[in-house]
Length: 230
Image 1 (cartoon, one colour):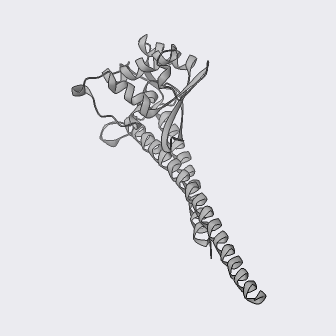
Image 2 (spheres, helix red, strand yellow):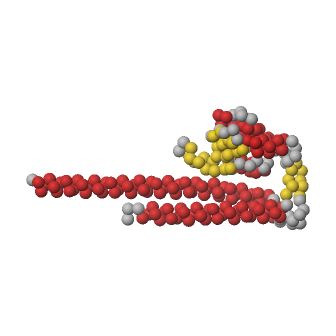
Image 3 (tube, helix red, strand yellow):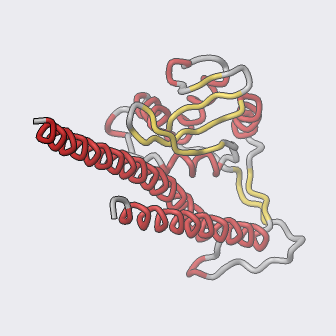
């Protein structure tokens, strides 16, 4: 009888051990998959930024695909940059936020800085336009508007309520200064095209290196995932 009970206990212990091992493997796989998902989301954002830089590089080039050739010390002045209706609404929303209004839109807020998701900023802008005038701009367009009017911000990806979102972080004082510059009519293009193109290419190379680094990490994690339980 004792031998029988011993055998039964041994089988139960063995079964429990297998279940524990299997549970650990499942948890480990889930952790690795989450890490891969995070890296892929970061890679997607960098790819979008790379696309924006490519667009800016093309815009700074001449017609028919020919790049302007200028002396390194020569600046090219163009007419004042005037925002269109959609762009002006983006700037107005940012100004209201800087002045302490629309706090309900913010993801985080301090006396010096505020953070807002691209989705929340875009939604507020679209609310101010009749449907017939809405352009259906995607969230990446916001980055181009900010770059066009030299409004500096930090952009990053963050998981919010189980969803991956793009977050913009602004310094209130710097943003207000940039907005006043635009509204004061002192905003104009005055850039060394040659140096500008070189800067875009340097940034594009940096973004490409970031993507390569992420690809390496993703590959290693995928190899680790395939080896779990083997």
